[in-house]
Length: 303
Length: 324
Image 1 (cartoon, chains in turn orange, red):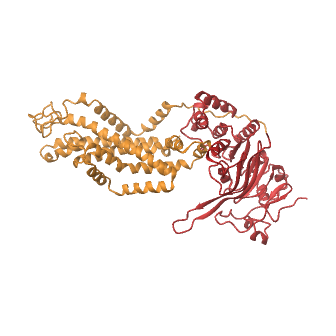
Image 2: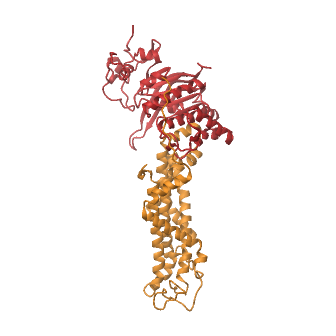
Image 3: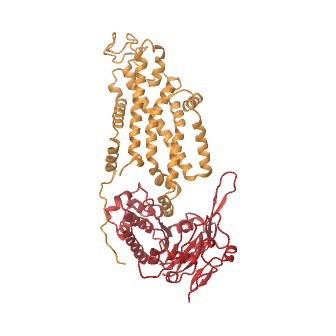
C-alpha cells in the first residue's frame, strides 16, 4: 500500500484565552436576562468597592434631629437623606450601600468555603469509590435530610451568633450539593479513555485527581457556585433577621430588616428598602447564573 | 535485538466479581480465562474476536492498569505479579497504549504540546526546553505540523487525533505498544494512513505491537502472528500466513468466511454462526463454543479441549479441519 496523501482539514479557529472568552460571551449574551443580571451585579460590586466614596454619610452616624425621616419625595422628607432615616437617625441609603459589602463578602466566603470542601470530598468519593464513597455520601445525605435553614440555625446556636459563624454554618449546609455534583462529574470522567491513558503514562493519583480530572468537571460547579451565591446571601439575611447572623449595628441587610420590624406600619421605608436590595441582588445573580449555565453546559451548545 | 521476547503470558486469567445485590452471592465473570502467548521485539501479535471476548481485558492487563487474577505475565523478563513497586513504575514506562476512540483518549482541556510533554514531566527529570524539543520531534515524526503544539484536541479530526495519541504513546520510548482497535473509529481513507504510520514507527523503533482488532482485513495487513479469542479463551493462534490460509478451528473459519473479499470469482465457503455470544458469567460447559459450533459432538459438551499443535498453529478443538 503506498502512502496516500490526502489534504487534511486544518482547523484554523483562533485558540487561547481570548477566543474561549469570546465564544463564552456569544453564548452568554444570547440570554438577555443574564446580561441584565450581569450588569446589575457589576453595579453592586462597584457600589460595594467604592462604598466609602459614594455613601453620603457614615453608616453608623446618628442624626438625632432626623429620626424616622421619610424619603425625600414624601412630605417631611429631606434631600440630605434620600431614602430617609431609621429609628435612631441613621441614613438608610448609606447603610444600604455599606450593606452591599457584607452581602458580597458573605457570598464570596460561603461559596469559596463550600466549594473547596465540596470539591475535595466529591473528588475523593468519586475517585476512590467503595467505602470512602459510602462514608462521605452518607454523611452528605444526613446533612441534606435537614431543612437547610433549620440546620444553619442549630449550627449558629451551637457556635454562637455572629456573622462569621453564620457564614460557616451556611457553608456547611450548602456543601453537600457541591459534593454530589463533583462526585457525579468525576465518575463520568473516570470512565473516559484519557484518564486510563494518564494512568498508563504513570501519573499518580493526586495529580490525576486535581490536574487531569478536576478541570473537566468545572462547568457544573461554576454554575452551582453562581446560583448558591444568591442562596448564601438569602440565608445570611434570614439568619440576620432571626438575630443569629450579623449583630447590630452592622449594616447587614437582613439585620436591618430585623431592627426595623417594629416600625413596619409607621415607617414603610425602613423595611422596604433593605428587602428590595436583597430581592434585586438575588434576582440578578440568579439570572446571571442561568446564563452561565446555558453558556457552559456542553449539552446545550451548538457547534 | 529483533526476536527477543518482550512479553510473555502463560494461562493468564482475569476474573471480575460482580455484585448482584445484597442478598445474592457475587457472580464471577471470567473476562479472560487462560491466555498464553509470547510477543517478540519488532513483531505484531493481533488479537481477534467478537466484542466481549476479553480483548480489552487483555489490553488492561498488559498495560498493568489491572492485575491478573492468576497466571504468569512477564514484561521484558520481569514477572508483573511478583515485582515490587519501584520496578513496576519503571515497567510502566515500557508499555504504552493507543485507544480506539480518538475523541475520548485526549484530555479536552490539555493542549497537544502539554499532552505530549506530560509523560516526560512525571517520569523524567528533563527540563522545559528538552521536553519541548522532544515533543516537537515526535510531532514531526507522526506527520503533524509544529504549529499544532498550542492547539486543543477539539480542533482536530479523528485521524489527526489518533496521530497525536500514537505520538503520546511513543514519548517514553516504550518497547511494547498496545493498540486497542486503533483504526476502528476512523474513516477508511484515514485508516490506511494510520496503519502505515504505525508500521513505519514499528520499523524505526523496533516496537512490539499487541494489536487488538475485530477487523480481519486490517489484521491481515499488519500482523505477524494472530490469536483468535472466544469468550476469554484463545481458540487458535499461529502465524498470520498459516492461519489465514489454513484456519483449523471452526470459529476461526467462521470469522474468516465473514470477511468480505473484493474478488467476485472467488468461491466462498460461507459459515454462518447462529445464536449470540453466551454470557461469560455462565459460560457453556466443555468447549465454550459448542452451542454455536457446526461440527459439535458429545465430547465437546463434556470436556474443554486441550490446546494442540497442528501445522504450526495452536488449536483448542476436538474437530479441527485438517488440510492435506
